[in-house]
Length: 192
Image 1 (cartoon, rainbow, N blue to C red):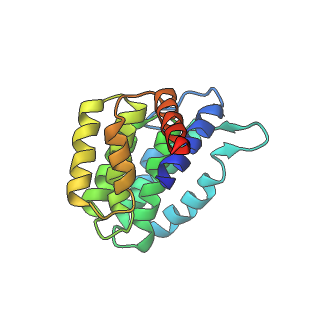
Image 2: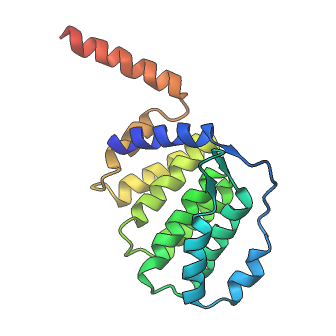
């Protein structure tokens, strides 16, 4: 439940941040270059590009830099799949894709993590976040429900199991409806 509250708060913060107005594409100039780079160069480019995505002064995301970052992370995952950083970079790339509202790209990366990096400690979280993205960002409730249920079946003891149960119970409800329901439950508890 703690994760859900943190996730909701971070979503509100991300929505509040503005992009720089430049159009992003799924195929930026970085794409061909990323595929030809070695793992060491990709590692360096990931670190450099990550620091260029967000401008604190202007409170804006550079979506083109974000897409470059994602492409470098994906290329690293392909080039060095056994490297300890591969799954971590892919996870960060998926979160970046969600931040810039490239939801289909985020879903694809979460799938890659779950399918190909199953020993990564956050692999179950990738499945959870895919379901959460389908639910909260894309309003694809049937797909989200199926994935939440699959998560509960495969990872019933995971730290996100309580969050998943809560989300399943509140699937399709707005944040306001959930908050109102929570406040009503709190009032009932106080009366006891």
